[in-house]
Image (cartoon, rainbow, N blue to C red; front, side, top):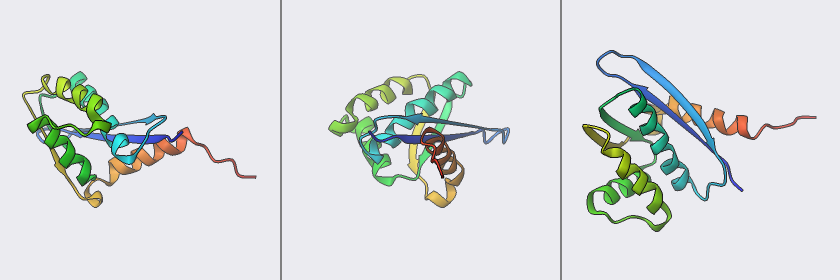
Amino acid sequence: DRASGCGCVLYNTRTRDSRQGSSTELFVASTLMAEALAVPEALLQAKALQISNICLKSDNQVFITALNSALNSKQHLVELYGINLDIEHLSSSFTSLSFSYVPRRFNSVAFSLAKSALFSANPVLLV
């Protein structure tokens, strides 16, 4: 019974406009799964905003490598198979979609949003 916070920042490089979102996922088996669950949420938000060119960045290098492998060679990690299929299906909504690794220091806003979402789902009672 593990919860995970998901955070994303949608940044338009042309207009320099940004939007933030966060959610909490319950019953998450691993950090890899948590990272994977955040991607469809971010893609759905981008689709709703009619963004057609996406470069999704994550500070989890293992996840980015696994995701790129799954989408390019159809070799899915068993743990992420269903989520990868969802991502693959959503990818057809975009003109271009790429996934890349970014060090956490450059992803601090999304990381903070995810931590806040997790904390709000698991409040601490201090007595």
